[in-house]
Length: 573
Image 1 (cartoon, rainbow, N blue to C red):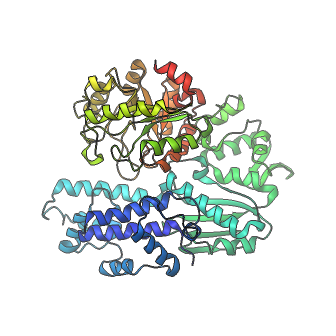
Image 2 (image 1 turned 180 degrees about the vertical axis):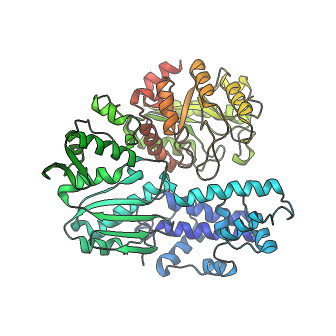
Image 3 (image 1 turned 45 degrees about the vertical axis):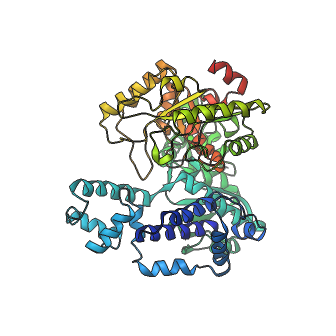
């Protein structure tokens, strides 16, 4: 069976996990993790990329990793991987997915308590077998309980940023194998609505040869298991544990079906009640009169027009007032990715990024941007190799020289400065005032109570040089809950001080979320959508921030980085 780049990345990550449990050389472990990162960011078919020599020179994929990829492509397996798997119980690596549980803890639990799986760990926690182990106690046990809760949530749903590219590749490979049988094809469900986490995925298709299409679907390189196979619906399980259903619908019902299976449930219930009041019946096959005459169904827009509504974009279909707005023709003209003119939150090799300033400029210009800001970490964030005050000023001077050679493009000097536990900033005002863009962010001390955290952030926003508050709640989906913070108070200070609030596009953040982004819009607080990119490929994550903003009803005029360069410069002055 053909092996995909996602499967190879998964194997490399598992090798890294096995080596971590064994306490092997951290540089060797990181090599596998970097290779997995590189593979997940590649575009195109892995076998084709290898055959054309496109993998050579890719950062993170050195000669050794390239040889391992070659073995996997030719044999479907890797001896080193199989040897490591044989050394440990099958469920042991999965424990590493639990927040608060690291490799040393896994090794200790395995050797001292006999924990071999997540279920074993839950039983050990319930019977309080961990608190007497070396370096552990009641508090550690409590943290592991919280980690288990987050793990269970994550297992039932995956990140939008994981699901979107995966489904895109599934559709691409399906088109390559069965293009002559596919007429229309589209994902539906919460993925199409752009929710931050996704359950099972529905893909709808119209086809001239459903039987052959199902054969092609169930033999894709992404198939780990076939859950069901039929003439009009089949279900597969990917190596990531994601269930994907392919449904074949009639061409004359595609619009009604894509509307129905996109949801949300509450949105559809509202539509059905509206249809009943008009003497109509609506389902996945179409819109019908009481006599059973079909009056719409081929096009999705028709379904809404039959109910005297403007077409409602999928991201708004959460029963949050969108139907009432559509009735009055007052739906927002939602922001698009093409509206974005730049990115204010970018890391380079100056701190913990993988690419240089020049690399980031090149990719930004390829995207049609007019500006970017380089905002490497400040000194206290040691894990991210934060810059000293002298380093950041030297970088700012270098950026000035770079700008002197650029036409129709601007690089802003900046920093993502740490907000300390007491609300002071990691850099002095003397340094901050010399930078173009200052982003303030919390990276440590997330367990402060709401009063302390709120006061801490508010104090930072009162600094005259802070322009952006990054990832305001500090959450990491499936790993860390949002910190205790009164966002209502923070928003008021941001508005009063002219601070922009960030929608961070990293898949695990999407912070601010859609609900708070809409609240910021209501309060007329400017939003910036940034990627927090640590490599040039991550600049493409802007699409996730845009989707989140769309779900928050944001329009072009609500977002600062839709401004062209000349207007932005005027604003900054």
